[in-house]
Image 1 (tube, rainbow, N blue to C red):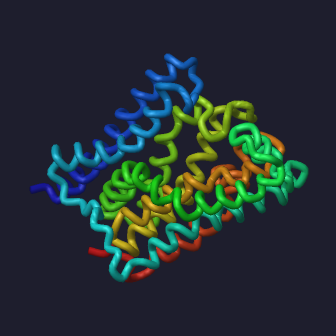
Image 2: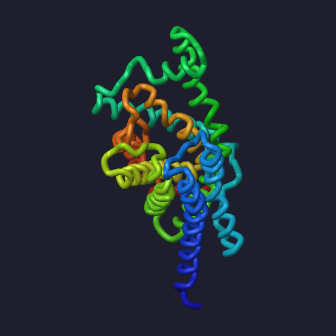
Image 3: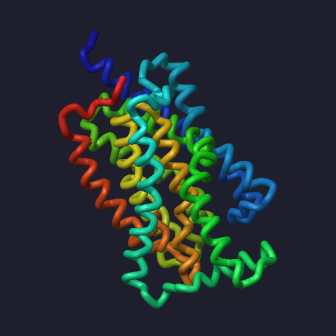
Amino acid sequence: MDSDEPVQSARSTIILFLVAAFALDWVGWIIAGAQSGWVIDESSGIWGPLLAVSMFGPLASAVIVRVTRKTAVDAGWRPRIKGGVRWYMLALAIPPALTLAGSAVYFLFFSGDFDPEASRFSAAAIAQLGVGTDQVPAIFAIQVANAVIFAPFINMLLAIGEEAGWRGFLYPAMREQMPRRRAAILTGAAWGLWHAPLIAMGYNYGSDYLGFPVSGIVAMTIFCMAFGTFLCFLRERSGSVWPCALAHGSLNAVAGLGMWFSRSAGGTLGPMPLGLLGCIPVVLLALWLLGRLGAPGADIAR
């Protein structure tokens, strides 16, 4: 048997996963986009359910590959809570900390965009909930507590669909073919580019920014490479995809908090951690973690 055959087989397995993951969701997004005028409206009857279902595309792709190629990649489905609580605590704590730090960096550069009164949040609370101005601070506190403490666990049930694919299959498969650092970076790049059709239809950043949609796709990919490194680190240390799903769910819950203090609608720079300025703390954390991923004894727990 040719010694290169196992390597080629492993690479073809990775390629099959990527083709399936991109095709399953891109086809649905493009069809929905054609029907909605290439604009995403999450309140519509199409986009709301579709975005939720799309999060399970990577999981479905991993299942397809595992069944058709009979690969033995460890999916990391065991929660491994015993002895691993600290990884779940980090999964909860790091996304809010990065969001706060990223917003601070953004407003440091764009101080004129900072609204200490959180007027956009106040107006929405008064209009949607019918509360008085004096009740807004209490509503704000409840919303923040929910985003930081409770919502991550609910969001985790959707985020597991992505994490079971990206960190549960692709990353372990790639790290068998290359160093952990490169595997983490490339997994994040694939995750970021997977969002491209959504970004091109105004998701996350809108459409009123310089270089639309290319600069938005670039910003999203950079963020996913950086935050994905943190998720790969959790995968390595915990041996499970569940801390990754919890961190992903936490990010989805808190990413927009900085927007409440923005006078503008935000964009590719911030204040969300997905912006080029907002993600600076995420990138710095990723650079530090890449060193940790390359350290001895960093293998995925079995």
